[in-house]
Image 1 (cartoon, rainbow, N blue to C red):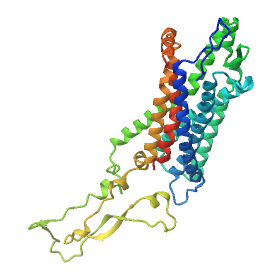
Image 2: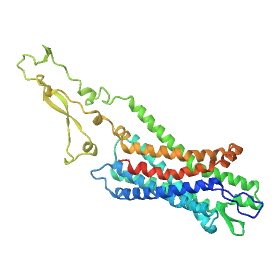
Image 3: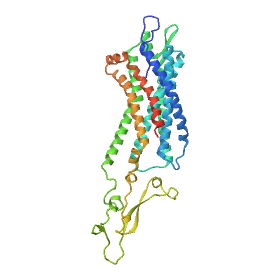
Image 4: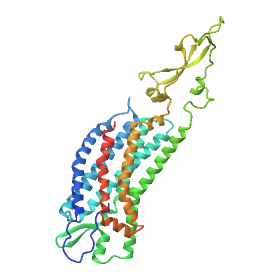
Length: 400
């Protein structure tokens, strides 16, 4: 993510392009050509969804549409800021935008990375909150939570990107050949690199790697481990509630069985009227009925209705709510397309960002191994992050 450094040169001639430079240039151009229209279409599709109110609709889906919209903006920015300028840079093989352009580009490039990673973290935290929520809250509460998360994501991304304005500058390798490099590469090129600057470079690179990937990755890992623990916890809990609950499904379905005569169900010979028992019956509530909560609008309700105990007809047998109606809110959401889509987006993000960040982590463990992999195309792994901006809109834009 820090670009290709310019090593000190003994001759005042620009280096020639390597084969990997041509491959990377073609690769970036393909991603820009394919990714820009896809992100544009998804952006236009998501824009009206973010304006929809929650009345009569799914609150969860509306809040997720806002997250998708912001993630689409970051994917767009990675393509049009980071990838496009880098393609121009590789095409000209010189930095054509002066020192101010170098600092601004590196700030915006880092900002797109940080914001994309932060929005992914927001999605993971929102899923965690949804799974652990004991009840649905109003739309205002959900909107407020989304606004707080996204405000923090964008603000934190801007703050983390500020060091790029200091760490990058241009150097004149020859009279008419300039490059955008770090201040440490300039110090090495001009011969005044010292231990103090090397320690500062180490702190800068460690902070950058930690904030842009490893800290978000840790948050996502913990979030989904907690979600998995919640799933396992409820997987071993009976759906009908505690047996001693007065009106739990487990208790109200335990009705006394009648006497069986000649293979058919009959009443006793007593002249007394048949007893009344509380029999569960499923009634579909109309969404037009007043004073209904959001839960009763969205699923069938189990009612306790007095009914004469008649065993001559099978129509009076107790009917139990279908499994989908008895599942708790969190479990239905785990099976929802929203949860599946978020899991896919998070998994692809980690899968495509991990290789390059692993390579950079190796630099602090074994510099020789890092140099060996970097010389053999290891730094091209950074471009997998750009590929993420092509795959993301396909995952969250077309999955309904």
